Image (cartoon, rainbow, N blue to C red; front, top):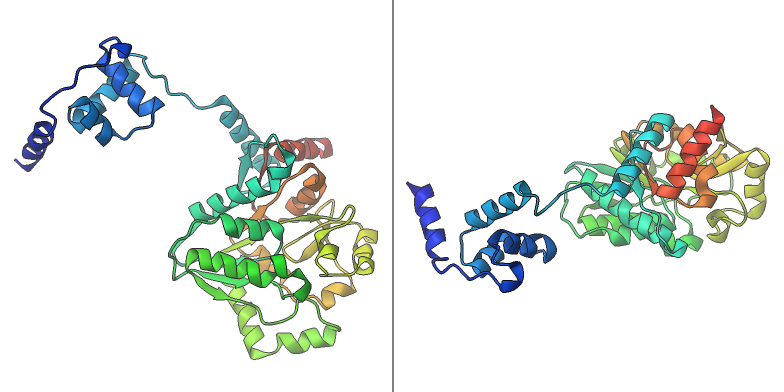
Length: 336
């Protein structure tokens, strides 16, 4: 039979069984377990080193578990993070939450959240996705952490217009980077993010090319975006996206955060001003109809903004850190 012949061939390659090193007390099971679990060697390499077949290595590793030489358990800190994620989902209505262990160095937090966000996006990809991309430092950092893949049937589309002053993390660059990493179709929005009057916005939105772009956005299966708090100086001002005076109008109206093109207050109500009439971005109803709305963000100063965003249902998937997640849970419990 072919199976027996394959096994015989495998055994013949390892006809000379090696002597167990003295430091393992002549215990072949311990030797195999050490090489596999402590040194991280693959079973093929262990088979060569011990002079036995791959099947025999498998049996030795199983025996190591059965005899208690190896105890496999889940890291309690990971269980704790899983509990935090589940509790936050229950309180907030999130579909899913991914929680990063809070790094010892706060300066690395944004980069590490972006790294986790990249892994989350990769794991959730489908061959025919249409991914809407917002702009910002977190999204650009995520794009740099993506593994190079080949997904020619995925479309990556810009959900808000562009601004020259935000070149280092502009909507165009964020969208292009993600598409490049995925070898996907890239569709940029050839319109400014903010125009001079509401009439100019109406004219642009009625242009066939731009109208077709927003029709495409209605087919999005995922959106990716960060969240900005409105305390102190913000990315919105630093980038030149809007003036201090325009932003102050939103603060005066009670806005605490901005995400995916929209301002919102602490209770999740969308806050609008004259600026929205000139802002070219994905329609709110279309955004809320996207099945997977993935927000990547965390930090103590962002807790209020993330809470408001979750109340607004702008995101239904959150990638954050453990400290922020626990603070959000405390925030929900204080409000009930």
